[in-house]
Length: 411
Ligand code: HEM
Image: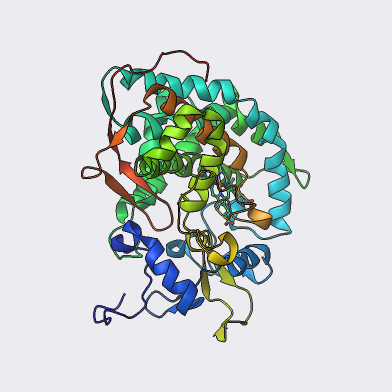
């Protein structure tokens, strides 16, 4: 961002902490004044209108994922090979092959069968705080439980989960205004890759269960997956499975604490919870943007974009567009029932974990509203999690009446 920018100049910097505090004001200006916005300092385009973002997600021939899906890790794939192959950074037809492969073991059925296990895990964390009358929602509930769930799916031992939570958080942390990945984030990525290299080695000798072992047994084009491909799946599933879901539930509680009438409706009628999860995903999506690289020159809204340019698809901005959601687009309403939103992307890369994320979000909110129904957030003490495209809380202190609801596992 230019230090001399006049006060009214439209500047969007996804790394600025002030933008993290309220991205929706600048998104509204982008949609209105510069629907194809160019940031000359960080050298990216940003699309903010719902129709444009959806179309760019759909058109992988023009908006490629192979140059990386985060702005700070963009690269020229024709010259730089990544350390490991990530499904999320492939285009069809390669992407189709690997996505089908993962879909064979990461099935909607397998995820929906996890409801009892998810409820048991969440209840355990709620049990630990319910008599205390206060908790840090993130440290005590919303950070540990999604890592337990994805670890149960992948076959990762309980002892290793705190380590994976720490490195997964550290990989995403960014400094104010800076596109540079901090050394701490690079070190954490190195640690996570090293962990999975050892884990794959252990599995080759003692064949632990879970989805990672299932993937090791699969064949792609008649051959086993390479170590780079397996590492790509492990890192993607752990980070995607943990971070976005943690943020979804803490964002939900934070937003609902500012809309106590709607929170009270959810307490009184838990069948409203799936709609509330959907509205949190629309209103304040955990993933605020995805990065794409242009495969050819392209013109939008009178702007000439060039082959190789970076384009940010602003999910958070698209999800507040009056063109799609009408005049109340900027309001939070658990009764909205939108036909669609872009929190999980769209098209070829549509989130493979969407069913699991929705299940986890619903069960966690049901349990929190059943056991801690009168929670209040200490808004002065909450601490934001600063990443470039994932939004949420590093700490969210809450207070509630101790032991307010009857313990038990029935929702
Ligand atoms: C609230 C929770 C979640 C949100 C907001 C979210 C968001 C997204 C988005 C926006 C994409 C599209 C990326 C792109 O187009 O480049 C994506 C892809 C993906 N997500 Fe999620 N996600 C969530 C939870 C999960 C969970 C729980 C998992 C399971 C481990 C998961 C696994 C994946 C995978 C594997 C992909 C890549 C799919 C592909 O490239 O074909 N996500 N997610």
